[in-house]
Amino acid sequence: MLIGELSRRTGVNAHQLRYYEAQGLLEAERGANGYRAYDESAVLRVQQIRHLLGAGLSSEDIAYLLPCAVGEAPELLGCPELLAAMRSRLRRLEEQMSRLAQSRDALTLYIDAAERTGAETYPPFDDTELKRVPA
Picture (cartoon, one colour):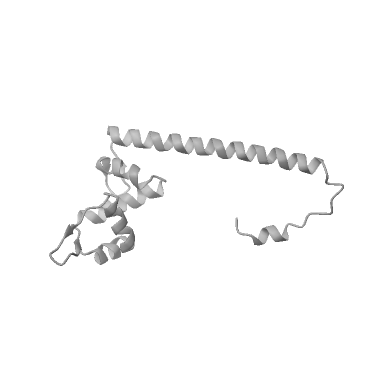
């Protein structure tokens, strides 16, 4: 099938499919006319990629995981590549969460201190302007 058909069947635009191919996540044969031709298994592969991306994995992580993937969801077999990549991703997430928690705690302390000091010397705060600025 051509890239347009794969796009239609998976709901993934052609630009993303070409990106998956460039990342080594998806394979296509090239016809004499230079068009990409995908076999039927590409539909399942794209579904697997989308699910793994949805889990927050990078395309680099997914490249390691795909040999261990079975089914659309996908079910991941406990092969060494899979476990190493998922453990690495989990460590990165835990580190990010720790940094965010530290930032939250520090900001909370600043807010508490600011509310205790100066509230009686400043005019009431109008946060209307802040609400207009996208976060």
